[in-house]
Image 1 (spheres, rainbow, N blue to C red):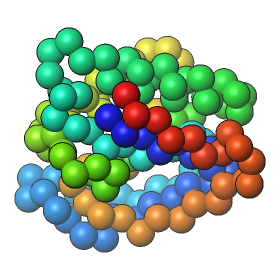
Image 2: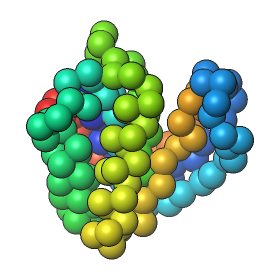
Image 3: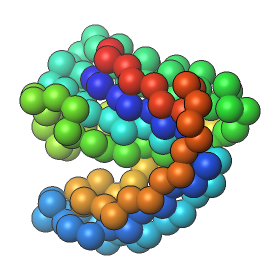
Length: 135
């Protein structure tokens, strides 16, 4: 798994291009003061025994605590590596991570899966506003 974490003063999306035929109808959203995880799920991340989901959740919680917030957005971003996990398995991993974050008291949403989006983000120019991780 490869993840580019951003702390954003503002993060908004508008779905523009459907890439998966069975993707549900999306809606645009706008959020303030949020950690956004741009997540590339690789094939090994969805295999039994992988710790990628746990590491994703722990790192998202760590960064949210650093910014003293409780909001996390999970954004599927399959552009950080060559190999990609099966889309259904990748979505399942994101759903599990979302549930774990919500169970821990974090307001967590996902950008609509199966779409390209127009994105708007405002992020401060500080070291903890952008963090890249490989698990």
